[in-house]
Image 1 (tube, rainbow, N blue to C red):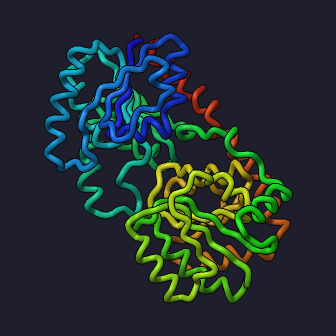
Image 2: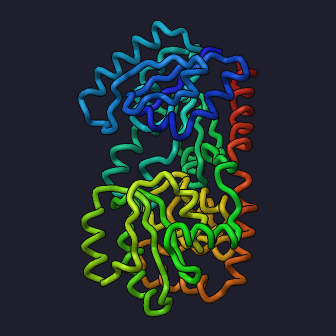
Image 3: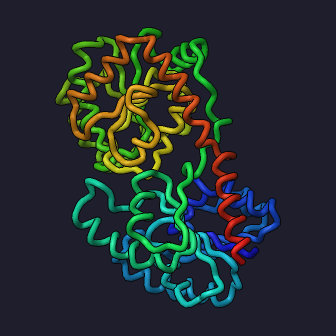
Length: 375
């Protein structure tokens, strides 16, 4: 099969789709990619012979430059003789399905990494994205979701040829070794933390969606209960200056560490005692899955995606959005109950196995095989 992978930006392909594409190539398919090339395409894909078609997709659905992107996409589909198009990210996927609506022989697969409309989303998001997804679903042969809320919505409200739920894009468990006490303490010495610090970690962009404010406010309560508590916020974003001001206001400079962009996230997770998330919107959060792979107990918001990964009381705690007091209460429960932390560690490692990249690739193999049988 001659398959075209489409994404709004190259970063999505580089971060999530390299194993998927190389798997198809190994199975004898020809794969090309079309995207806005903000970052160089992953060298593994280039070495595998993947052809790259730069198309200037824009993330905003209202950006007029998407009109030219749509024309470029149509020219590519006219010339490329693709059998299947597998598309990712909302804007590119909308344009792909519009372009393919009259191309009856071209099969369209769409992986929704998290619909922009969800329980609790703004009215603007529902009015902007829901009607488009609903209308274009009838031009979708296979709609692939990765959390239970999106799957239920697609099954009940959309008219795609088939709806399938998979365990995300897959986590490379080989990158994340199970935490041991010896390695945890070695890394603490290397990074300058104390053996008896109680360390929380959250790897996410510093923005309103990830909502780190609630965690910083929770720390103001936690320092009264846990004198040596630390919160490591890994990432950059537009809220960094505001968070620094809040940390200073609450006199938490020694407890809350803004770590910036880091390439050593696995090591920082290895030295932690628990992972946290205050996000108000997720598809299926990679940071939570990575924490589970290491064996960290979790205290996370009840948003979509988090609920799919964390079972309250089993491998972590689910917390009502925007409630710093409840975050503080659940984190303190972990601190004062080492046996519960050990139990949650075991459960996290067991539960993450379904999300391993090899398992997800096998799920995709079955989807592609079914599509092949349909002809």
